[in-house]
Length: 179
Image 1: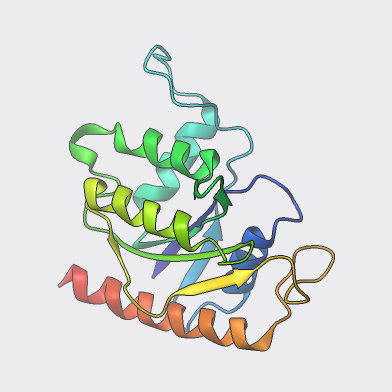
Image 2 (image 1 turned 180 degrees about the vertical axis):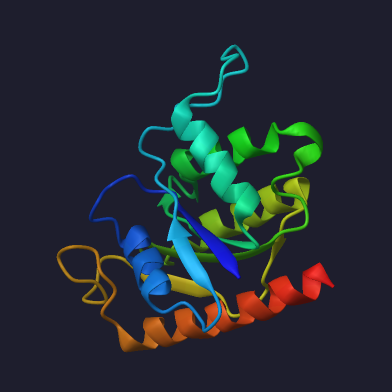
């Protein structure tokens, strides 16, 4: 199973990318996780008639994916622009063919409530895009604790366990949706 992880933070030491790096290193047997690079993806603009190479690569990765993982930071109680922008580009493909019907896992690291507000906003976007997010297990992490090292890598065993459980559930969910 080919899983694409899309992180909403562009910082190299992002704790949200740290969650995705942990997931990538602990992909369930029979699956692989690729982390998309959004650093060169420009903001969606309908006036751009020729897709930039970074957008073409992202869209190819989404098309090849059996399931998606979103590393969802919370900016001002909502979805980070980089993640929303990636979804905006993908949703413009004819008939929403790249996103519609795909299984999704959402995880996030942020302040106090660990991106819960942004994750719920993202779930609303998923409804419109006909993406199918897992209901459980949810993964929320406080980015400002000792759960992460100085490079943004996840070191908290409880959160690692939550991610392992979520990955197992995602693979099963994606298989059910493909039946």
